[in-house]
Image: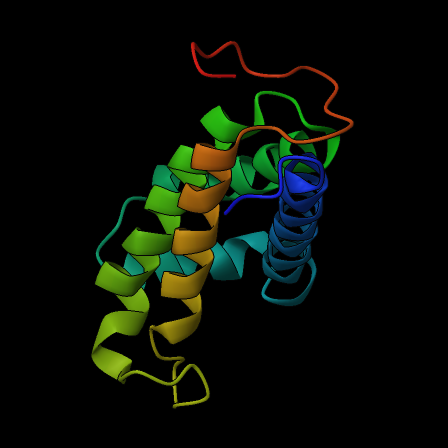
Length: 136
């Protein structure tokens, strides 16, 4: 049974946590790996440079949108697809555990599922701009 009195706060906690994680991962790519290093990594995967910039933009703006609750369910979908893409392009061949060399696929899969759950839950409490959905 769903506790309707606390569900909006559960969605808020999930939304803000996911947003902070995306900002932290974007900061890692920008300040530690550096943008040129991240673009080079994408090139090593056979992906175009523009895709690396798109991922950075999605993570920064998507993370902020999640934290603030700006169309969070709609933002969660492309972020979830990005996480599935990391499995397909970078982590899938490294095995299950993310502690494996190169990182496995357990963590990105859990992250993707969490984003899809947020999509289903909705914005939650304290959203700046709730997404207009028929069931919201």
